[in-house]
View 1 (cartoon, rainbow, N blue to C red):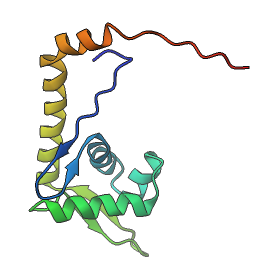
View 2 (view 1 turned 30 degrees about the horizontal axis):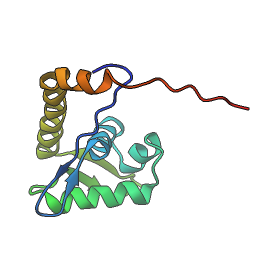
View 3 (view 1 turned 180 degrees about the vertical axis):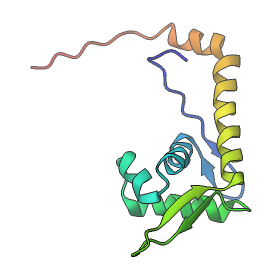
View 4 (view 1 turned 90 degrees about the horizontal axis):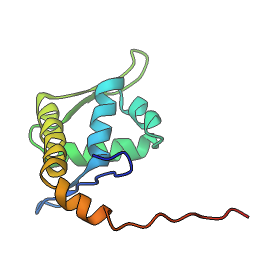
Amino acid sequence: MTPDLKLNLRLHFAQGLTFGRGKADLLEAIDRTGSISGAGREMKMSYRRAWNLVEEMNTAFAPPLIDASRGGSGGGGAALTDRGREVLAHYRALERLVVQTGAVHIGGISGGLVSVMHDEK
C-alpha cells in the first residue's frame, strides 16, 4: 500500500455486526497491552467505548474474541482468545489481499487525484 493511501475495509454481517479496521486495531491493542483500558488509552478512546466494542464483538462471536477479567485489588486484564487471534489474522489477511489484488485498480483511481494546497492565512 502506498504511504498516502489508507484502506478502510468494513465487513457488514447480516447478524448486525460491522467489523473493520477500528475493531481489528482494538484487538491488536488489547493483545499488546493486556487490558481493555490500556488499549483504549493507546487508541485515544474512552474506556467505555472500548468496553462497548469488546462487548459487541464478544456477543457476536462464539466463542468470544476477548477474555476479560474485572479489575480491583488484584488487577484485571484482558487477552485475545484463540478465536480472537483467528478473526484478527483473517481480517488482516483480507486487507492485504484486497491491496495486492486491487493494486492496479487502486492505482487507476489514485492516479487521477489532484494535489490541493491550502493557504493558511
